[in-house]
Every structure is written in structure tokens, then in C-alpha cells.
Image 1 (tube, helix red, strand yellow):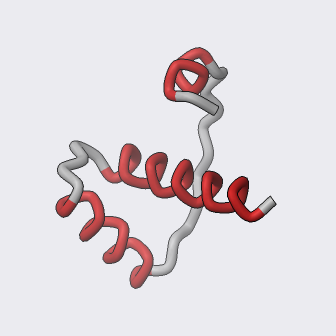
Image 2: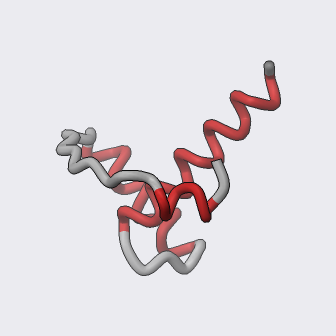
Amino acid sequence: MSEKEDKKAEVVPLHIKYPETLIKKIDAYKLENHHVSRTSAIFELIRIGLGELEKKK
């Protein structure tokens, strides 16, 4: 899914409990990659992960 498609998609609120160690890694990624929010870092990590899955198919 492209960024344009992401912006057009319906937004669904989702509450997820993360292990503290994962939050620390996400926050480090956020700082290293100049993301404004933790949410934007998580979105990018998910897109990267899904892209890797597609490559394996």
C-alpha cells in the first residue's frame, strides 16, 4: 500500500499494550530516523516489515 492509499484509508483506533523493551527500541528508531511521533515510527516499521514479507513471497 502506498502512502497515498494509507492517507485515504479509514482510520480505526487501536489500543495495544507493548512490552517496555519494544517501546525503548521504537523510541530509539524514532529519534534516529527523525520521526515526530512514536505513531509515525510504528507506521514506518510496520510498512518496512510488511514490505519484507512481500519480498519473501
